[in-house]
Image (cartoon, rainbow over all chains, first blue to last red):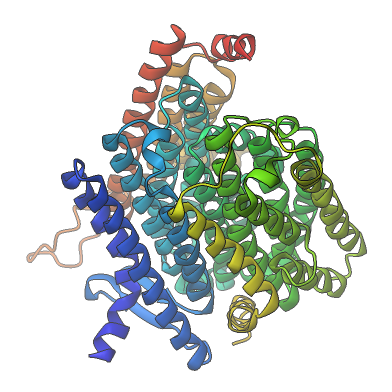
Length: 498
Length: 125
């Protein structure tokens, strides 16, 4: 029995949300049932991924491999739960559950009607299924399909609010994201043409043999993939779609898009970069230098752009651009500490940014105000919401005892190991800038006279969701034990020393 | 020069794919009409499909079904064709979704020109 469960869990955590997504529209009139189904899938997913992660931890990173349809590696699609997969699965399940909980009772008036709410949840489950798939797949073409599923559901989530600005943001996002997917598919095509394999492991072995014969094709493949994933993950000069898309979406959608949506593409990029190209080729083609440079530019530019925004949701969206920079920076260090830091930072940013967006969403739905300057004294009226916002801000700025600190600490030691003292300065400057664009909100909320309106914290499900995410930030910061263990295992796996 | 030209002529499907890709990308990035952007996306994706199909093709290759009489006959690689079938499905869904969004944008702004929409948005805020 346990053996069967263990053997089939990798596919179950991907298929379950997708399956429920397609069943959901039949219950569209009974919104309670829809909500409980979504929560049930979230809880099941969390249990399943928790079990998988503990198995990986106990067995010291021996991967669990599932061959789709019984066809093994060269022919079929291989799902592979290794440390990296288990780590990201846990992040996806851990963040998507509170975000779904936040939508209970709250979403209907934001998207306008129970039919729209059901549609929202369909897209939401499709997105979480695709993200779970990205975590475990080890097939290049499967990566493309999952990227497309995620992109289309992200665009749908952005346009969920019946507002012309949402439609415009979604259209711009769709066009740029499809440009990105075409580039990704092209890059995968180049790799397939020179290696003849779609399985990452086999493609990597073959690429190690033939890259000297086709240096230009390898260059093309790497640049297509970098630009393609860069557009989707909002790497700095390619981020133009993100602020509009993330600030016009309904708040649970902004939370999941900023928290998890962009991370899925980064995980795929990490896998392609390290599991297909590998560190030798990265150094040979100077990819690591390009990544470090792009990451540093993104951190500084994103933070400065965030400082210039008065609309709170836009400020958070630009902050995502800056945090994406940290991830690419860490990928460029190509050493164990840097990669551990990158992965941990991805997880902590997923939890923190979802919490921040949900807190801001609660403030906006209660008060109807979008600008920071109009939110004076809000902390005295909505103490729980604002406390979560404060914890999130402290975490993002990288204060010790909060999750952001550990990720940045490992990134910092990674940068010193890689000999990039400029990168270390940029990491610290990014933290300072992060404090500069988030802390004024805290000051305005707590140290200004309270407004006269009778505003209150949101309902019980929303409060539970917010508190869960804030607890996640603190737990990851104080007791990172198993999480850090998984991240370290994943970093060693990616570097090929396991 | 001669060798380069020969290579180009022999590999003409790839050359065509590159030209199509550039046309598509330029259309997406420079045109402000939403329909033209969408058509550009489609051209770009066709270029990638062409590249994959060309990679799987062998001149004079047969359909990849086992021929009992002549089992060693060359046959084309079916994998890229199968992959591109999926790619075409994805591209159709993207097109359908984008068209739906264009309809909604036309209903609320009365135009399908991205620049005019951006101007109108700025006037509102």
